[in-house]
Amino acid sequence: MQNVKGTYDFFGKKQALRQKVQSTLQEVFELYDFDRMDSTILNELDLLTSKYAGGDEILKEMYQLTDQGMRKLGLRYDLTIPFAKVIALNPGIEFPYKRYEIGKVFRDGPVKRGRLREFLQCDVDVVGISGPEAEAELMQLAVEVFNRLEIPIVVRWNNRRFLGEVLAAIGVPSDEKLSVMLTLDKIEKIGKDGVIKELVSKGLDAQVINAIANLIELDNPTFENVARKYGIQENPGALEVQCLQDIIQKLGLAQICKFDPFLSRGLSFYTGTVYEIFDASNAFTSSLGGGGRYDAIIGQLVGRDDMQYPTVGISFGMESIMEMLENRPVQTPGALVVVIPIGQTVTEVLNTAAMLRASGIRTSIDTSKRKLKKSLATASSKGIRYVILIGEDEKSVGKVRLKDMIETTEVELTIQEAIGIISEKAAH
Image 1 (tube, rainbow, N blue to C red):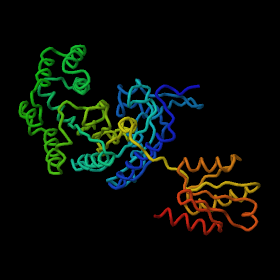
Image 2: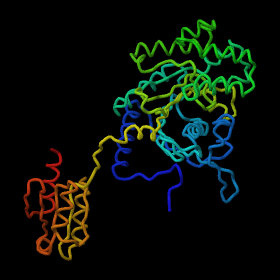
Image 3: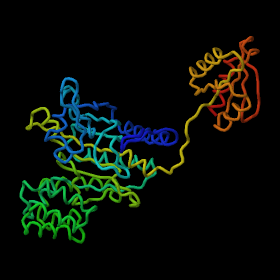
Image 4: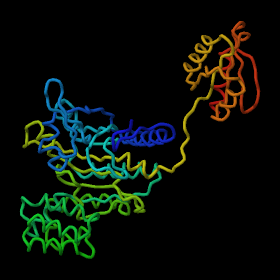
């Protein structure tokens, strides 16, 4: 018996750390006034394979299945398309609408450090804001998240529209732009020589390849330098970049959020700004999160190509974050009280535990029938402060015996009195 490759079970300290990270994300998401959503894991295959969804590059990694009615279905490979479906199916939603979702997604892709086949994504998206303030707020949110997690980051960002304008200026045919973008996006992984080699394999014109080579060889490829070199400062994409860059500088985020003219991200649905989050120390090379603007998907899903639903989002990679934090110490939550029966008092023990839990006290029951000395030693080793003993004598007078393992005291009292003592000490 073994787990499917690329899937894991989480428990104990590892699960406690995961829960702490999720709680941190949720706190920040709600601090920024995003509402929680849960979308469907199972979706119609036509939706997931739509040209408006992930595109060809994601199809080979999608888990496909058929139900008993022979309907073709698929497991979601991200949280973006199911979210777009929710907006498309609910025209009464008031905009701007801000949502977050934390849920599992599935991809039958290569398994490596920080990349699994069943993994948790944590997304925030906002629909109904067309200006760059939406992207800027999500960048602020990302910085806040990683500050709280004590992970130094760099947010690399670009604009797909601007990159398209650059490629048009150097002569890349319109039907080749997306393909070239996806190759340029790999420059950090395969290097400049690898980019040129891949472009040659795609059969691009030699003159175009030479122009792209000149682009990636620029000494200081800032937005201003690239826009000026190709004379596109007043183009729509360039103006979007300029506007967002101004906001980033005024917010004091320029040292963290750095412009990268070659970034495009893998999915084809992005229409404007894109960004990706990396470990600033470069000790961990996989992405910690990413996202961007996708204004066209929702309108296309509802069959209204002429209708825009301005949308921007960001996704945090839980598994990559966990890889960064795997050696962090974490306090595993445990019981504050353990109740132990002595003799035939199991019913009284269960009733006492229920009363403790009703008062919000995390309570364990030890019905192992071991010697009391061993049970007390186990409680002490787990850091449990209080032990409640109920024997025949306590049962007959309706009381319990409360042991404080720190103060090494033992008293007989009613359960209400015991709850009062435990609650008071726990509050301090």
